[in-house]
Each structure stands twice: as C-alpha cells, then as structure tokens.
Amino acid sequence: MAVTSREILPEGRAAIVSRTHLSAHQGVIQRALAVGVWGVSLTGSLLWAGGGWGMWAALTPRWPWVGAALGGQLVASALQWVFARRRGPYYLLSLATSTGTSIAGYWPLVHPPLAAWIQTHDGMVWHAGGPALAGLLIVSACLFADVFPEAVLTSE
Image 1 (cartoon, rainbow, N blue to C red):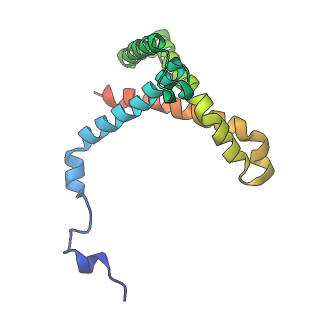
Image 2: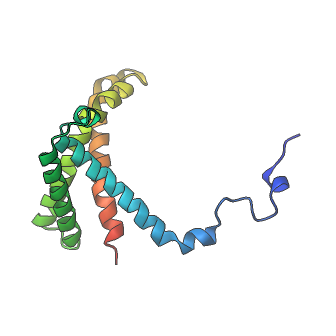
Image 3: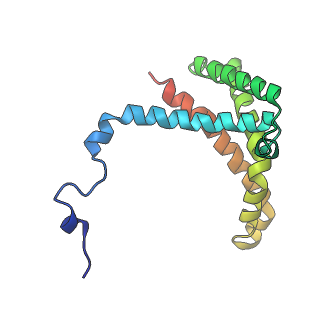
C-alpha cells in the first residue's frame, strides 16, 4: 500500500516552504542569487589571473595578478552597473572585460571535458560541432553571469 504525503502531513502542510513565505522574501532571495551568480563571474576572472586551476590547486597562484584581476573585476562591474541604463561604449567595454576574463578563466577548465562529453552523445551531428557548441555554452554562461546580477541588483 502506497503512502501519500496527505496521509503523513496535515492538509495544507505538504510543501516545505509556503508561497506566501517565498513571496514575502522574494527580493532577498533574488538578491542573494544575483550575488552568487556574480561570484561565478568573479571566480572565472580569478582563475584566469591566478594562472589556471593547476596553480590554484597547488596553492601557488600569481598573487599580484589575482589582486589586479580582483580590482579590475570590481571596477568593471561597477562601471557596468552604473552605465546599465545608457548602454554606450563604457557599458560595452566593461561588459566585454568582465565577460572576457570569466571566459578566459573557465575555458581551459570546462571546454575540453564539455566538448568531449558533447561529442560522445548523439552521433555525427554533435561529433563535428562539439567544441563549437561547448564554446558557445561557456560564452553564454559567462555572459549570463555578468548580465543577471546587473539586472537584479540595479533594478529600480
């Protein structure tokens, strides 16, 4: 005999979190998620500046470059968020800098295994385009990691 959640929990208490509780804290949840996603972008920049995953795993990253990348990422993010309303050259330059350093950090770490995984699934179509699709996914994820926090944290 199968036991349902209605038999275990009283009526109306089957959910872990209620919708009213979530809607009351929606702003906090969105901001926390945006800060976490921005951390993904920052991590990519720090991976790139530190010399890659191998240098970080050996605890010997290039510390002066890490400091420069951290400062550069903070400046690029600040400029991106300040100029978000008027998407002119300063905005595009800061977005390109932030996204580019994130891509440079994640590319050597994620691209080879992702391309290999794509090429081993679903035959010849993906076999030829696996590296290109993997690159497109990395670029899209890094662009999202830069634009989403800006959209949430600078909303009116």
